[in-house]
Amino acid sequence: MGGGAQTPGFTGIGKYFITSKKFLTADGGFPRVVWLTTSIKNQLGDVLKKRCEELGDPDLFDKIADETVATDAEQLVAFLTEKGHPALTMESMF
Image (tube, rainbow, N blue to C red; front, top):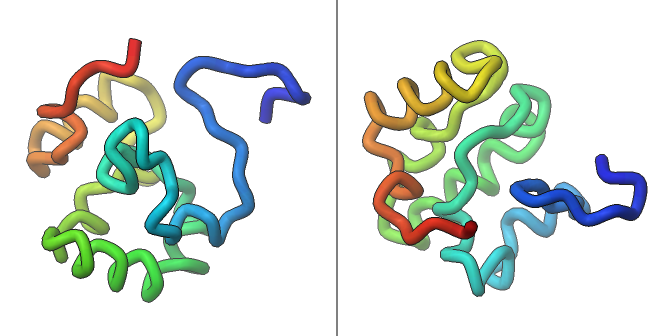
């Protein structure tokens, strides 16, 4: 993703790390995730849904956009707003 360079707003990880309780802990954890590819959502769906339940927000998985609903920032914000994604109420990372 970044070729070794840090890129604000992007985090390169192994795909299963996203299900860890330690994922992005300093920045709000898994509820900070707003977009995933359909492929990753399909591959990790059951595990991600379980993680959402553990976090007390079983609907969080359905609040995460993918390329079928958002391909630019404007569409993403509209989707997140419609779904009530918790990242919209979190403190800015920048």
